[in-house]
Amino acid sequence: MLKNSSKVEDFLTRNEEEEIIEAIRSAERNTSGEIRVHLETSCEGDAVERAVKVFDFLHMNNTRFGNGVLIYVAVEDRSLVILGDEGINNAVRNNFWESTKDTILAHFKNGAIKKGLVAGIHEAGEQLKAHFPYRPDDRDELSNEISTG
Ligand code: CA
Ligand code: CA
Image (tube, rainbow, N blue to C red):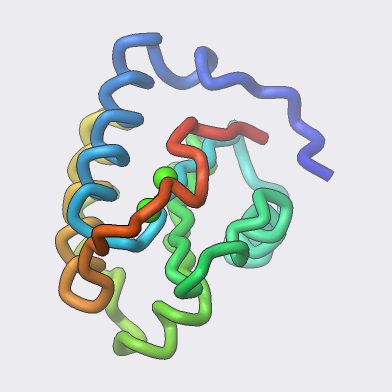
């Protein structure tokens, strides 16, 4: 189903990849929410529909509080979707991700993919914290690794 055979190193250097993973780790130390990043070259058709498919493919609905959030990027299209699971959607207003999206897209405009993602992950973590604070029994429910299409 994820038919493009792109790899993380097509989009990011090893160091950039590490920085992004560290940003996710760090964000998840403040919230029970689980953040994932998915990168692919481009998106045929509707990016939101594609992000929904990726969300399912990565079993991101598999969290205790339904608070997984996917940051989906079609790199060449500069197309970005932030998709939260039910627990998040029930807890927040509709435009919850708008400022995070704006932050990321502002960096993408300058070609700064890594910088945009790190800033976006940080902001998403801060926002999630208010609704889903970190819990002492926290587990890393969804991998922090970047997935690709
Ligand atoms: Ca967790
Ligand atoms: Ca995680």
